[in-house]
Structures are given as C-alpha cells and as structure tokens.
Amino acid sequence: MARSSDQFRIGLRSTGCLNGEMMTSLRQAWAALSPRLKILEPVQFSSEHWSLIERLHAHFNDREAHTHLPMPIARFREDACREIYEHAKDFDDVKTVYVDDGWLLADGTPDTMARYMRHYNADVDEMMGVLVPSARYRKGHYAYGKFTVPQPHGLHADHSAEDPAGTGEPICIARIETLGTHYVAGDYKAHDPRTQSMLKALRYWISVPEGEPENILQELLKRGTVKTIPVNSVMLMVAGNGSANSQITQHIAARPPDGGLHSAFFQRQYKLYSSQTSSKRQLL
Image 1 (cartoon, rainbow, N blue to C red):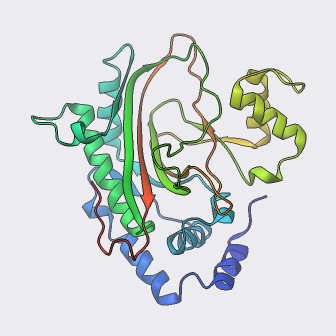
Image 2: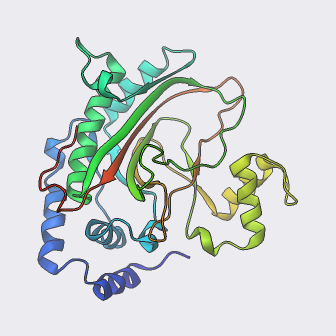
C-alpha cells in the first residue's frame, strides 16, 4: 500500500535526508529548468512526489522510495510529440538505435529521430542534474516505427550487465502516443504467493495454476498490481542489478493489436558516482 505524503515526510526527517534550505534550493532549481529544455516540460510535483524526490535526491538507493516508482518527471511538448509520431509512421518495421560512441561522434546532420534523441538526452540530463546529482550517463537507445510482437517480451528489468557492481540506478523512459509500458506497482516482496505465481507467468510468459499469461495480465491490471505508464511522459524508474537497498522496476511492453501500432520509445540509463569520485558532472 502506498504511504501518504505525511508518512514520507516522517521518513525524511528520521533519516535526516535534506534540511529546509536544501529542499528550497532543490525546488527552485527545478522551477528554473523549463526555459533551458528543448522538447520537455518538467512536471509540477505534488507534495507527496516532492517528498519522494527529496528522498531520492539525498540517497538514490532507498528501497522504500523505489517502491513508489515509476513516477513522471516531464511531458513532451505537443509539437515534439506530433513530429516524432508522424516520423515513426513512415516506417513499417521497428528501427532500434543504440546511443554508443559511434552514434555520439557521427558526422553530418542527424535525421529526425536522432535529432529528437539528442534533445531528449540533453533535456533529461538537465533534469537528472537537479534530481539525482550523482547520476552520470551509462547507456541509452531509441526505437521507432511499427511495433508488432509475435512473441511477447515478458516482465523484465533493465540490468547493467557491463557493470556487475552496479546496484539501483536511475533510468528515464518515454513512449510516444501509443503503447504505454506496464509495470509492477508497490513493494514486490509484499505480494502473496498467488500473486507471485501470476507475476512469474508474466516474467516467463508461461501458464501457471492461476491461468494463462494473457488473462493474468488483464487481471493484474484490473487489480492495480500492474499499472500502465502514460504515453508522452518521461518516467523515472530504477535499473541496475539490484541490492538489498534497491528495488529494480519490473515492466513489460504493452501488446499492440493485430497489425501493430506506430510509436517511438526513448531510454536513457545512468550510473551513480559518489561526490568523492567526481566533483563535476560529465554527462554526454
């Protein structure tokens, strides 16, 4: 069960996360972001979400705070949504591009989607510089076109296979116009054995005593055990390899209808550095 904003504030006070001056500075920095962003509009956080943000800002690997993620931190501006979606509709299959050194150092004028990915990267980096100052870019990718799923991609988490020591890490994802991603809500450890079995069905897309995965997904959506990320929003989640102090977000792509749907997807994952490691942000 989600905790109230008052309970979150009690948690913040008990851990001594942020003093009043730091909280004010954080909120002022967030309010000043909008003019600097190219395609995103920062969310105006509720008091409950501010309590969560302040907690993650002080120490990102806070498992209790992770049980309240994903949460929206920004929305795409309407003109950006429109152009991204119209460009995605020009393709009858899915094109996936990884943001590696070759992509970052590519010569020439970027195509439409690469240009928007660069804007997304820059805007999300600006926001993460406020929300989680210890975050540094790890990896990212984007995909666009007509999405069809002949074999369902089951419930999964975004790991950091290249860094076995990586624990809970920030990751920001977004879906444009269609196919919002589903995720498991709340504290995973609190689910009863029957629900755990149902989640196993979604993870491996197999039959279990409780039923078939297609029906189980619909049942868990009705219950609210599984929820859906809104489209056109940037969602802050948890990636990495997990630890006692983290809960990695488990999610599953929404299944398109027969014939598929056009959409676009953006993802940017971060690693965490201590203040002793680097005193200067070096985001790509």
